[in-house]
Image (tube, rainbow, N blue to C red; front, side, top):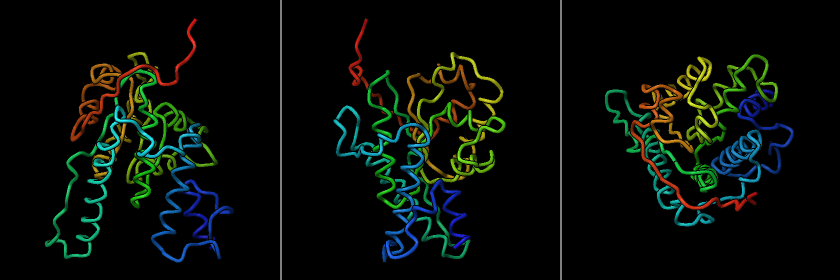
Length: 246
């Protein structure tokens, strides 16, 4: 039980609230999906977006590309299922399947519905049996500062949590960095993105910036990695929050 509790804590779960006993689903697959769902919801809450847990692909409108998001997650799930089956074969007989689109970039102005759409995609990935997490770019970088990791985690544990999930939503890429990035920003963003690409793990980015602006912050090489094996969803329209102007 202690070992299980440790695993749950590393996944961002509260062992005291986990279903260890009679509340645990009979199906191992259902139990794993519930663990993943809790990890997803907790990652939203940790990033200050707990209210986004209610969004699903069915709640999106056409300008938020729900079918594109469904197809994106679907091809990730298909590749993951195929590769898990291949792992049971002898190494020389394995045929690894790479998803056509590894990175997805939801780009558009403030209030265009990017974060809502990304949260809905993450929730759908969890429904499909994937481990998904959500984090804002600036918050992730803040957590890697000395003694600034959340929930008693170490810096290494923060890295592992977001490097190893099947799908990571990185919200507001390069937000408010004013075309300037410190070595801390570039190094740790590069480590995260490179690790995920090298291990074949998918990332969904939301950003208000175009590729040239991202390159100005992160550098051309890293911006190129973000855009490699990627697709872009351009979300346009008025600010959905309908803020008061003065």
